[in-house]
Image 1 (cartoon, helix red, strand yellow):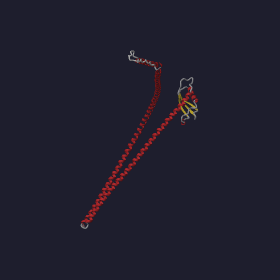
Image 2 (image 1 turned 120 degrees about the horizontal axis):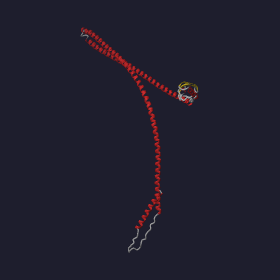
Image 3 (image 1 turned 90 degrees about the vertical axis):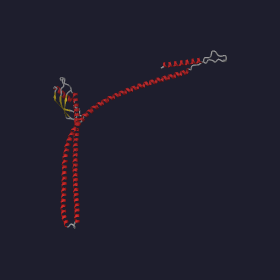
Image 4 (image 1 turned 45 degrees about the vertical axis):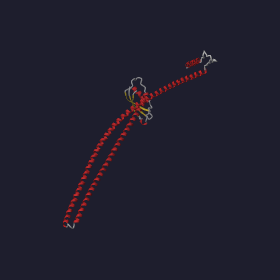
Length: 359
């Protein structure tokens, strides 16, 4: 920076000198004055203003220093930004690794859930098939009952129609007989009873129409009552069947839920028992010392009797592929491991527990 300032100072100084020299030459007096010139103008000397030059040089130095400081600050800011970007990149890589691990775990969980869903779907398909077969059988029985009821209704309707026709014929026959008698009477006293015969004929016609109307209304009422009764029976049967289906389905769903809960409890108990036995086996292994004369480790079935708190009161060695010394070492290890680890759940504690020991 000092060297740069010196160069600038030298350039400015030379420029000022050249300027002043050129100015003096331009002011040089005429060496051959005319005869009319009365006075000679003296040559003026121009002095260099060193304070002005120093001020300009100082100002330039400040500008150069400010520029250098700005560049240095920019460089420091850039380096700081690079450090921050590297830290952010490291954090992002760590986050991506964690995300990949989470995705792998989620994929495994989804795969297991899919297997469970497939098994559940297969079981539900079987239940649906059984329900569909039962529904088909029930529907066939309902159709058969409806067919029988329809046949009974048609038969009743036919009987009612035949009865109405029979009543009509009887009424017509009675009217005809009456008409014949009245006709004979009319023939005997035609003039006297003409008006009565006419009135009797009109009355018979009205009675006949009224009887026909009553018979028709009666038949229609009977048919409507039969239809209403049939619909009520069908609705009651449908509601009863629907209630029975809903009750059966609810029983099946309750049974499935109970079975699933029981299986879940059994699986959880099996895992806890396995963990409990593993902890006991681990503690016995830590207390086992291999017999000096026995280089091969066998496999022994161990039956342990314990009291609440895990204190061992008896040890029995069952089937064992090891030597007698090996059997004694296993028995000694069990006693040394007393008290045995307790299960996570108190109800899992068993007075006698059997496990296989193999180092």
